[in-house]
Length: 277
Picture 1: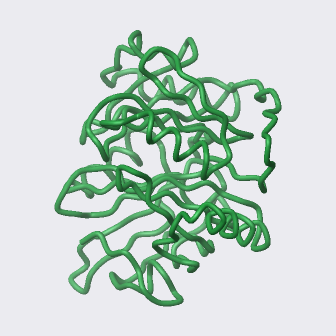
Picture 2: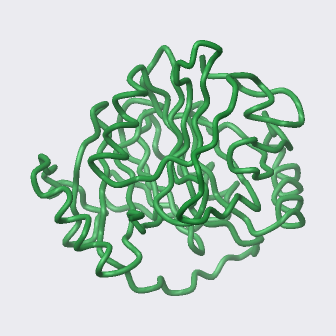
């Protein structure tokens, strides 16, 4: 059974969280506020927080379960796993459950949440929702086993080389193709986060918005193989990729796992790609 949860937000570490927050507030249409050392950027159905720390690393990723039954299943499934003390995480709701994956990433889960109050923005942009993120890892097989077996994530697609070695994989927690992607790489670090906009026309409007800001699109517009979504990416001041994507695949519960070759056209069926290994 699916984990049945959705990504709420990421909390990034940064040597200059104020500059990072200014970038996301400007480029992704969010309002900015500060609580202690934590900068919060929040917009309609999208948010990213940041605080002092090493660049290209996540402080945590936060999911909300879609139902009380899903929350109870998750609590039961993870009852024997070590839990993270979240008392120092000032921007988390009460009752959150914290775990760490084998790479040390903090994963936070909360029960179903009430819909957020509407956020009013001075310059409205098309909708865009926190949808997925990716990490680079030297332990891809270990992480895949942890997320699927220990947490209940579902494997949508795997990418492998000619020998059958796993080089990337895409995992989902509900009907959308993936909420996390794992890329085999020489380093362990954060790769990108993606905000999902509803359709092609909205993707164009977001690209025009980046153009008006003179924020360079460093990859795209393209189409991913796994997920079939159209996308573009920019880089934030710390060098992290930040994506707008649209029309990602909706998966049936019995969808078979897809197998893709390790090549550029898997990550962008229209041409060039950013390869992680």
